[in-house]
Image (cartoon, rainbow, N blue to C red):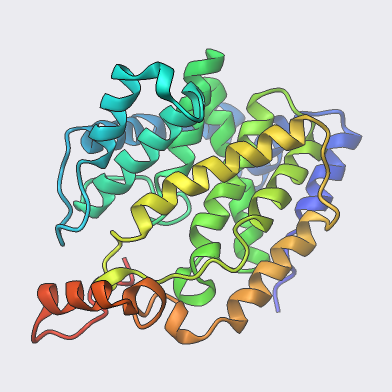
Length: 302
């Protein structure tokens, strides 16, 4: 069995070397991949235009293939622009919600996205990165470093648990995305490596047990709105970590717990569209309407 990666070990090494976690990840991954740090950062920065385009695609109001979602990002953008005084959550989270919905809708309409870590959770990371980028005046180089941090976190989650909704429920997709975004957010806001780990632990804890129950088997409902919820969890966890709040359970153990919970979930709640919201009367009616004669579960693996 391959040895599991340890985020705690990486964080301890970064702290020992007095490096930011982004700098540690850059040095480590450049060595592992036998490339230069500049080339690695350039690869990360090259993903940003794709992410930005996916936000813009969603803001054009595209409808999904199944027709269950589309246009909600436009509504959020209009609300933000026309009613700033009515915002409940403030400008950063409101913008993150908008972008998470936009990318989720772009994915549901088969648009081009960056799977981070999966297509179904692709709205979380760009939402958090771009919302913070705007509010904190971050450069593309800094956002590229944020992607490096997020990628390292995703590698550990994949090593110790899973990133697959079919294997671990939505906690493994949107939960992992929230953890990745939370860690990146802390690093981008000047947090220490140890605080990155606390944010990852708290974000994933708050998503623990989340089932994967796509209505009609499509990555539309509840997937798109869950991206917005996961972006919010990421920002909440990052805020707590930057304030010095710690997770009682160490981050590696939280990731292991997510893997255990995922393995314990019944198959009906792991992307099969045979439980949860997919089995509500309305969910069944949508499946019947969309796939009459074709059975359920279509497109559930995308």
